[in-house]
Length: 241
Ligand code: GLP
Image (cartoon, rainbow, N blue to C red; front, top):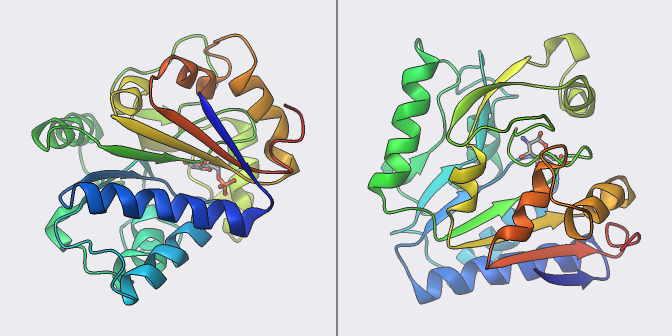
């Protein structure tokens, strides 16, 4: 594991954006695995700025998002479709047909999961996967459990995650209880991974991710097995390691 500690959220986000941009410079038709949540927002802002200044070009890039809530239509303001369009895709030149996000309003979720996994395979896998981390150590929506999913599946969200993500909804009751998420093998198959974490609330999860034993109770700890993982932190998130 390569661990990089930047002084604050802004510096961490800038570094992440530069790493994404250099991936695209090296391979213009890169497949990016993308994350939602609060953490990558400033990275997306910086990438938009770089795009406007002709420092990065998304015209051949394909994107694959980690997850989506079950039961939310793409135009629901809390869906990850909406988040990605609003915070990133609407402001860059990625082609619509190159954007892949699990469909949370699919009629048959099992089929949607299979198709999503297939679409990643057909694109020859993910070159660079961006991850955030839940305070309980989840990645994507792979929650701590005795057994973790291998491939893209429907998952039950834990109380802790529902509580943590309720800050984006009007009330906790509105947070969906299920989501479609890439599985652990889907994530670990990416050629390179960058795990981002910012703030004190992530410090314990980061400690358990980078220095604890590998355990399905801390899904992010499985990243220790990946040969090309960069953990990019701000000082607060790194405060316990
Ligand atoms: C959600 C997402 C994760 C994300 C996590 C942390 O549950 N499914 O992909 O990493 O929240 O979010 P935040 O960055 O807002 O703390």
